Image (cartoon, rainbow, N blue to C red; front, side, top):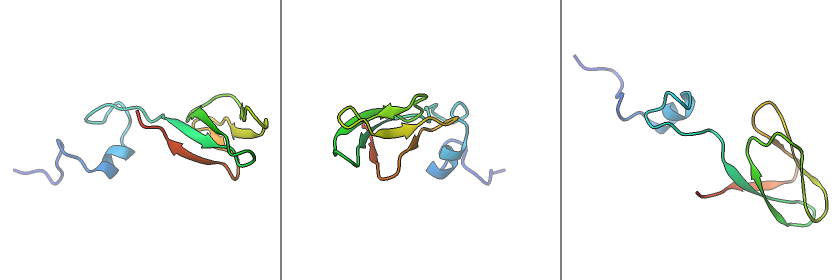
Length: 84
């Protein structure tokens, strides 16, 4: 008897949807990112689930607002995930 799905080698889409503790290899949903300010073009490191308001160090513009989970980035701000 064969299963309809492969339990040892799930697809990346299925792994992304499962809970972080029920994945084949446990991994967190959070990450660090580099955020570029739209005003002065300076780069600031930011945690994806930041629970405080993060402002630019040079021009004091607000880069992100906290929410219940992921931090909401301000409009016009660009980001990229940091490689670990």
